[in-house]
Length: 451
Ligand code: BES
Ligand code: ZN
Image (cartoon, rainbow, N blue to C red):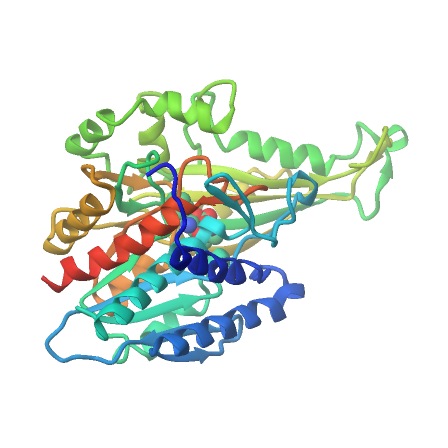
């Protein structure tokens, strides 16, 4: 499905999708709180128009939207999870078109949130709408759960699941918020990495100092941050925090073989990233590293003069933001604790370190060969007319393991993101062909899950 000629119906669906995209629903930045809220209202109105019964649940952060079809007792209930919040748009100057004005070029629509996750969850919404219009009812009971805080670690959703476990009771969960390995190749993800975040600040002198007057005698916080960051890995890319690998489960033989049979992942990784070369732990392919091995990453680092030219200063403080991607059976809280201890032990006595622990969420794996897993693969096969590939992903959707723990159901991760869709980066896009394929996928999935 590389191109798509829109009919009046598909044109109308796209227009509605673009309305959804226009909300700048950036969850991490308080300045956008109103836009996030308006986006939730828009979803509620859409669900009401479709004949579902929507509810907007306020939280201490952003609202959660739930919408249900009229339940029929003898049908399985499918929870469809998605998120309407998006990542920030910076660096703004690197966008070719305004980040919240959907712009179509060829088969792609460019907009923040186009793929992650509005396009993917709206495809499910429209699939349900189409089925309702055509048959007046659905083959399964549907509960939509679309949250506004996924990109900040879903801080309020686990408690919401606990408080509403009865009304969210379901047989299986379906989520499109992951990737496809290539256009036209249907992909089912059976595992996600977990995540644990922290930020540390190194405090040195009580004020910025002249680096000539004091340099040499006083520790430079920016250099201390760089030194700590350098200690995180050895030269082969292994994480050096003691205990970091203690509970890491090795990859299974069958998955290494299956991933090795996919199109060359090392070459694709280089091509997609535009990097000069691969890096990382020895003995693992790029796909194994990305999907099945844990990491320590610096997401931000700062301190000292960043402006034009030079300024001879010893900054009084400097900082770094770290995140760790986790695999089964690493525990996020444990990883944060050993990382915290490692940073504190390695901070020289000439400085003071503050470590602020951030959000975290566990990894997830399910059995892709379960009955529901097979049903999902049949739906993918029908939609894309090609054999589904089974992968794990490196990204995280922390709530998926909470859905397992609290609602006791697995999640079918049927992603529609393509490798070049630039999620979280400037010029994010979604292909319209995948948007319309997603609508078909939802309909096929409902039929297959109905049994
Ligand atoms: N959709 C992504 C997760 C994802 C991306 C999974 C690509 C698989 C492939 C999701 O919106 C996301 O970005 N999650 C964050 C979670 C974090 C902020 C808690 C992530 O992975 O960084
Ligand atoms: Zn995301």
